[in-house]
Length: 267
Image 1 (spheres, rainbow, N blue to C red):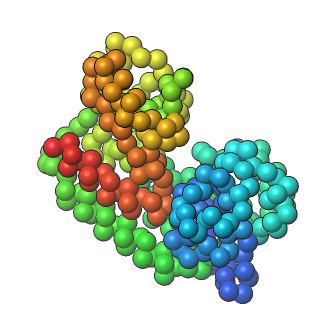
Image 2: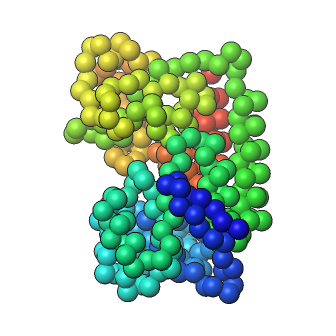
Image 3: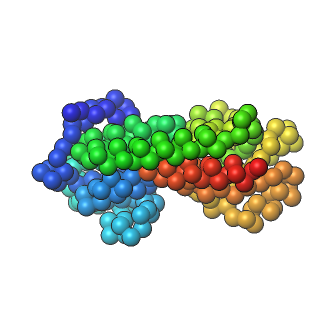
């Protein structure tokens, strides 16, 4: 069979036992997903941000960051497959790697539900469909449980999700993060036209929001930032586990359960 990735490229299924793929992943959440699909023995390279599951990935060579990879180190690993993401990896770098890596699989989940075709894509290419189906069922069960736990009618909150400081940065309404939060009625307030816009604090902005969210990644916001910002803007500020909100793949299953906890805590 053949499977189509995020840019429309087709990939044939392989038999991991016969073909012994050598996979480099430049996406932290995809690295975790590959491990959960049972493909860790075939991972030959990862970024320094690919930290889950720790006991597994610590033995996989690092090849740089998501945007500053070591091209020659990757070449020396002789990978057969490269997995990248449109948001997280730079196109010129991917094009350079594609010159010597036969198979480049591009991912781009933009909604929570996009995790299901993501499971199918990687499960299909690497012929681990049974495990992919198990993850899909766990995902579907978690999403159903979340929907059953939500109040009716859904309580809407206008939120500002902060991912960086100096300069302050947030996310737009067409991101995976925004879609994730929309499942519990939390709507991102637009602050610009960019996908990840820089913003400045203003009286108008503060008046437009109900809740400020500080993510634990990529900027490491802490409870000290929460206290300081609450005093500054006079609105409730909540520190969130950024991995639970922004990581797709198998982490999304735990992320859905995390959303349930957020809703329960807000009641």
